[in-house]
Image (cartoon, rainbow, N blue to C red):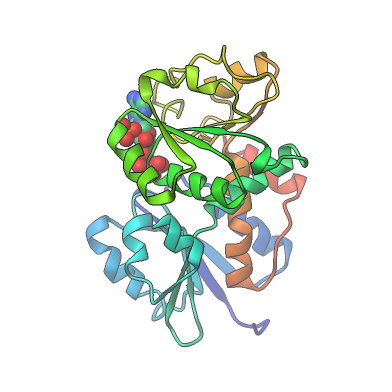
Length: 279
Ligand code: ATR
């Protein structure tokens, strides 16, 4: 990377105005004194192909891909990281020197790192996990848990068929639990993860009862707006360690920034403060 080169990156979604990714990447661009920018790329689904194919011509080093494009964007890549292939979705595009498009998915690794930031001793093989939800986010989490050696992943979703389809694809350690049995399924787990949209701003709280959750279990909520969801608040009141979704967002951004800007950025208190200030 030549120092004089102005590097363009961004986040492609529909909508993208709510995304905190520009705050993170612009913070790092300034911190490392780089010549570049990171912009919002609002693209409706019917223009996704045109937009992605236009990235090399527009001089972009790449972009993040967010809701609702993570699955469709994968089909437009020339090459894929194996993890992205297993997740059947991408969250990062890298435009290579020859103009070809490389798709990665850093969501799972970012999430695992966010758990380790909260508890450095956290291990995926410590015991069974219960994952709530079976959408795109759940898929990334289940793949990450299996890669971390989880002995059993209990998967429950309001629409059971979606959980079954995911389990079928990802292997026998994934056990589908009926949504009505989600509370009892907490018995014996070392980790509870919410990947549903419940608890997000504008949505009702996640409807769960934590009575059967073992005292040592870690609770993770992928939601980060608000920072403290009702699930996290209840978990903390009960004495559980509880991790919100902001750490996942921050940690998934690091390898993307590295791929585009050539620097593996640090997560500093100043970055966390800059992000907190946007809520
Ligand atoms: P993402 O890609 O972020 O995972 P998604 O694919 O739209 O988003 O998935 C949203 C998840 O939230 C799904 O598991 C969804 O359950 P369904 O598959 O039954 O739709 C879950 N979800 C949304 N509203 C819910 C609700 N009121 N109660 C329980 N789960 C809900």
